[in-house]
Amino acid sequence: MIQVVFDRARCPGQAVDAASTARGEDVVEIEGDVVLREAAQRRDDMATGNVEVVASRLEFLSRSETPPFVVEDRTNATEELRLEYRYLDLRRPAMQKNLILRDEIAFRVRRVLHERGFLEVETPMLTRSTPEGARDFLVPSRVHRGQFYALPQSPQLFKQLLMISGLEKYFQIARCFRDEDLRADRQFEFTQIDLEISFPTEDDVFDAVEAVLAEAFSAAGIACARPFRRLTYTEAMERYGTDRPDLRYDLPLTDLSGPCAGSGFAPFERVLGAEGAVRGLRVPGGASFSRKKLDELAELAREHGASGLVWVKREASLSSPAARHLAAGVLERVAEAAGLEAGDLLLVVADRAKAVFAALAALRAAAARERNLVDERRHAFCWVTDFPLLGFDDESRVWFPMNHPFTSPREEDLERLETDPGGVRARAYDVVVNGWELGSGSIRIHRVETQERVFRLLGISPEEGRRRFGFLLDALKYGAPPHGGIALGLDRICAIAAGATSIREVIAFPKTTSGLDLMMKAPSEVGPDQLLDLGLEPSRPPRP
Ligand code: ASP
Image (cartoon, rainbow, N blue to C red; front, top):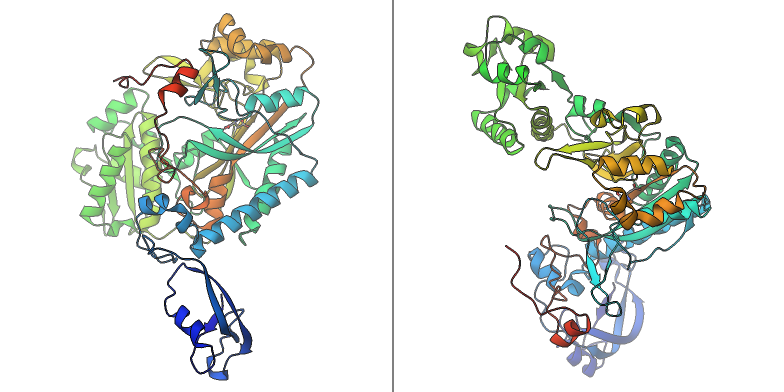
């Protein structure tokens, strides 16, 4: 950026005339003399602030129509308009900065991993289903009529096979495709820093990942305190109600099942009698929350599946709308257990454990924001370990893998695999920052018998197991080394490093939350010839 002077006293009239028709976003070629600016006009805050060009010639290389929005950082364009004219949006300095940061992060990640002996290997895009819990994107085969490739949900099986091939350390900055309901900040296609190590301990994986993240975030001047804190899944849930806790503030939950026993209060009695949970969240200084605020928090608790919210305030004395329903002494016991001090608020949720934790995790985040407890300059990293191997789907009444079906159970839990599937812990871990899951991985199953047992538990019959994963089961029979790894979300890392509110800000050409490419207009219909080639019929109305 430099100032160019067209003034009749110093420049040829032709140049001045041409310049007077120039408009924003025109592309011009200018010739002239670089001169020192007058002392009063010099600007030390710009690299080129002390000089200017006195033009002798101006030529338009390309002219611009009036752009649909002002191509500056401060734009009032809607995101739809920005995405439709992404090439103009990307001209804005803030977006250029994001792309530069992303490049720097990817470069550093490659450098650290290369220096640590990781080998980057590309794996296929046209492949078969790699189950990560989402729907596949399918690609019809023209040559093999009626057959389909799937786009990879992750390179999971390929990286395991590479370990069986004798690679010791693999990585890939890999594109992944998942056809899932797009929640707020997801994309159908996204990028992972995918890695795998043979003969690893959890510590080997953690060490590599901490080095990668430290390098990545240092590109944005963000320091990571290492080693990262570690919590087990159970600790994270009990203490923060979530497996991706925001540790920039503490605000732990308190188990109130004991103090609430025999309360005589129907909502408490009901859940305590039925393996439910009662937990509380002390909000320091929260006694000042208005009635309206408390109503909002109750609404938030309901949105997260809880049937309601009980609050207790300690001002001059203890008060709560539930007070008159509680047996004598319960309110005091509850306040005591939660460590309620003068000026504090206690939020209590009683329900099925799942709803209690979901609601209190949301309340915890809301309360931290409300009380200004979030230090936006801090980045609090942690590992969450020892996830349960399986979850149980109440509706379909089947076990499903918490991570994916290739995750190894803990050795000491193996004997309970069939008798107590829900109690088996996995050698799985997540890395979390500021309440965001940055990555998730595990030590894998490397014995074919264990893999078959896990498939069986998941309702995958031996025939189906062979049909879908025969290549893996075979490979495991030829001397598979123990192996494990992780995948980190590059888009999310870049967004956090850039301080962006959405991953769309750090992806050059993202799709909308409903999966549309507003610029290229994708997805789109294709001609009947193309469909015929693929052996597909022209579109029918979608299934209801
Ligand atoms: N493939 C897994 C995922 O995409 C990551 C891993 O287990 O390494 O979430």
